[in-house]
Length: 228
Image 1 (cartoon, rainbow, N blue to C red):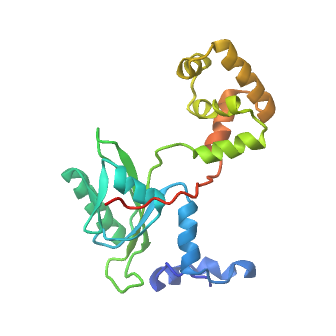
Image 2: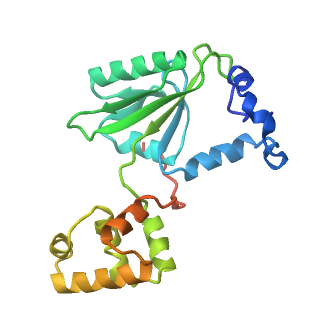
């Protein structure tokens, strides 16, 4: 049975369905590779112990903690700026230690972010700490990475002007709204939309918006570093 190096023995014992995993997937992945995979996921992700201490975080999570107005890093712990939000985080971690998942909208009127808390080891982590580990996933600030839209536009042979409309299409803006946003004529926008619809082979902008929101992420290579 394959067990990820980031999983504890307790949860591994419960995953009996993995016995039938194909042989091609039965080898163990290195921790470095697994952590590298976390960097490509289009969500901020943190691995926390029972005391909210951050054991690992990917680039998007690091950026959120550096620039966000809702949560930050204090003494290596995930900390909310508002006391009520902090109480919610502590309760979510306590629930996670009992194997329960939760979803928390935090930071009303302060740059709200939603965080899901997922138990990945409900008894003891690989470092021997009691309480287990929790995966905290931060809600996305953008529906789709700009690089993803750029690659999609290139694949569909969209011009730069047509590619510039994709973020607005994804947000469901009308031709009038797009024209006002780009400070151009509605006739020009509608002409671009017609070309986009033909090149992407969709029947409506609503259908294209659905396609765009479902694109897999392509993360840029930029590394976010702590600012002192």
